[in-house]
Image (cartoon, rainbow, N blue to C red; front, side, top):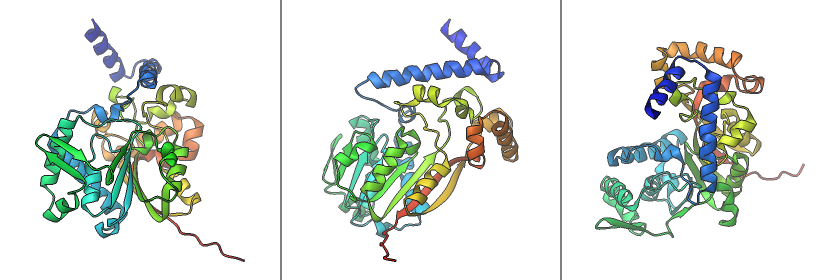
Length: 337
């Protein structure tokens, strides 16, 4: 019976029937998940834990993320030597952190409110595969970081540390201006207290240090998994969104300009690279749209469906699905007039 009802439900969605009712049930679903996570002792984010584990895929992703940090920032591996790095949201494993340490970084601290790490057996397989790809020089740099024994591993917390806490709590762990780099990949959009988190990162970053963040502005499947429009999440008012999103890492709905404004106001030199459009390939295929249809489709949606609060401020930004920010904190000198 449940399978039949589910098929009917998805059929109604595909026909775009009762869209407001569908939105209501989706909001209720995530409200329930939000409450469950609030009560739970070990919170996990569904965005990391929804995929099946595959060693090769995990290692390919680790290498891709690391390469994107280097290429999109314009930095060289030489810039990492002896540096201390804060990684926000390591996800399933510490592979990206190991890549930075193998490039000469002195220490990497990983922080995540959601402990979504794989079990030790799966982590071991990932690290074994990853280390086999390193050069002898890179493995030498990791000798006192990670030790692989039989089917287990151990990590030296003096070189690689994991803190299972929210970003804004880090001021109780570290002194101001502690880190040379603060990095994240598809994480900041899940930080509910994003204002406080960015201020904390600014406090912890050294003068002339770098923030490297790729932020995904899409809905992470909350509505698009039901074949609804990619911008549907912006139809939900703030009160309802807070009820359904505050504790399990749903997107905070901050757009590209929000982050650019933060960097501008806090005296960073920054570059922005647009890496995704705010519409999925799956949605294009479903609606039989081509890339040339995107502009018209989004414009119609923005002007007719979204509230004035959104499209008046962020109309042009609604086209952006993800962006990479490379921002260097300026070492300002007070000038006596």
